[in-house]
Image (cartoon, rainbow, N blue to C red; front, side, top):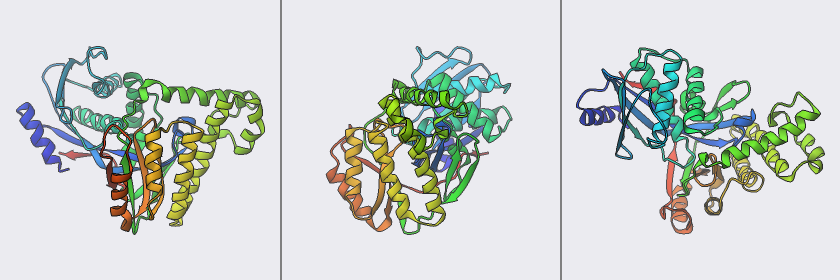
Length: 386
């Protein structure tokens, strides 16, 4: 999207010129699901699709925010936002503004216009894209440029405290630090990251939206975290050096599984093996072995479906449809689960056939037309204007 489109929309809405426009991408996680809050490894890419925010300062202490996607304008005093009086989408804006002010940024009243190309509720991190873009705009209006890691922490804290989703580090990291043409291998404990070339010559990354809207704040996401912590507590009692499932090996888990609650074993098994798959996928990318990456995507979905139990019938059906098309190397649930999107790695020559098979073969979801997105590995967030 041309940033000038957002500037024009802001002027039409508010009758004045915006001072700054920022863009932040959504993301699709190739592999490494539910590992980030377990101190593990993730391998996402930034989507070509982004969220754009245009902003300008006001002379008072009012936040006035318009969502172009929802055609909804809301306003509140900066020191008096409450979730019982405002719709949930405003929590991301209010949280970022409040935490910026708490760190000492001079946040004045502001007008914002938001337009997003990232599907909401599909597991493509529309929330992190919104948080990051808002943070760049509000800091910019105050004459500041925050360091990327500080922005990550601030946006994550806003999601925890205001949206009440206990997310990990991945979404904000890739939204800010992605590079075009690469996947981001992130160690969520050390925060070390590496940009790994995504050798897509003759291949494509496809995102298929199941049409089933998920809601991570509903409790299942937090419940999975608690179940993982139950497993960690067991192993920590044996060895205090175990601080997260990151520290548990498959051999150690297999040895103690008979003495552990079966649910804790299943959740731990997913995380432990998913970390192995993520590192294996990074190695496969380094040697341009996309066939191996595809096999790892398939194994990841089975683990998410059977051990972590975050898939659903519609997503499983969509994965099965994709796996039935010659030219699809692998497909799996991506994002938090309970609906949302599937990511697939496929040969470019098969895209037309994939679209036809999904159109005729997928019958699930609220949306009868499954939306198929072809995406590149895009760049991270940036100030687009001035």
